[in-house]
Length: 167
Ligand code: NI
Image (cartoon, rainbow, N blue to C red; front, side, top):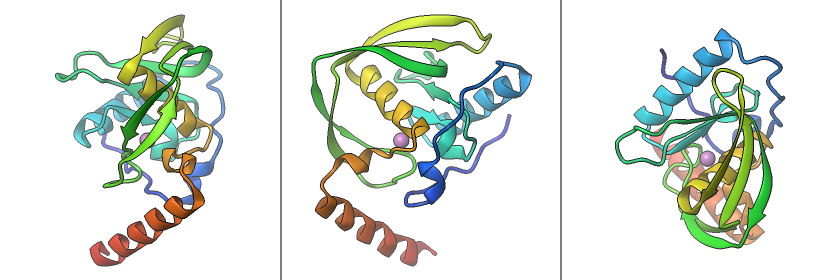
């Protein structure tokens, strides 16, 4: 397994729309393993392939405290949404920025697992937020793009300043 470099906002590659996985083979399973290791190391609770500059529809998530509930979603589609919730989100591609975003309270997602088998999962709360956040990445969308233009510009300025200091 290997740690993968994570793209940082405003890297334009984060706006790439990922392509569906045609076949879940060993190369995809290697990607899944590397993404899981990268997510745990960061540490984070979710990572989309887009964030490691691989533009295939693959997501890993683990919202457990002890890294015991790895969820792998290949070609995920949200087939049902219920309710609404507002939660402060962060993102490994936007370090140090936490902002409130409104999402569905519960979602049903259909996806393939690491063996290429189709399954459906009903999720709510934090897991539902995470699923929606990561699928957005596959569609080229970063969570701060839900904010007003004014707020987004402020964040961009802050990130640019930080990049200059740490460069
Ligand atoms: Ni993210």
